[in-house]
Length: 197
Image (tube, helix red, strand yellow):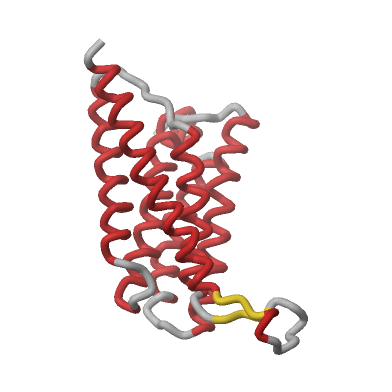
């Protein structure tokens, strides 16, 4: 491997992306237990991975090292970690199966369409809908992984100061599911328009 090719793969943004993929087995292992402590640490891993998702893109643009490998790997890493989290909490009944099916199905369809567009030399830019969908998915998954009641006000035990993270997660998951469908239909419509020009 030449130095130039190595720099196309082994640069800081791509290493962060690969670290996000490497975190998936740890996330899955933590989510094998429905306990509050496991959920807390799994949420921490997921949150850190989500931060690296923003950070790798920011660094790639700031450092001027946007690579083909990075463009390919970054969205795959995002989808893998979201899929892993949702699939692992599914057996605990924390998320409706149909929502998981809609979200994962959309990701597979859009990934397939992007592959077709790319093979034709067509670039269909990601819309703001897709970005908002990702944000709401992340917040929803954090809530669903944490799941239990948490008291965030200096440990003072009072019902008004207690937050049920599952309810918060479901609230954001509903929004994420609507945006998932909306952004998927929007991408499909733009894909058809481009191909029929």
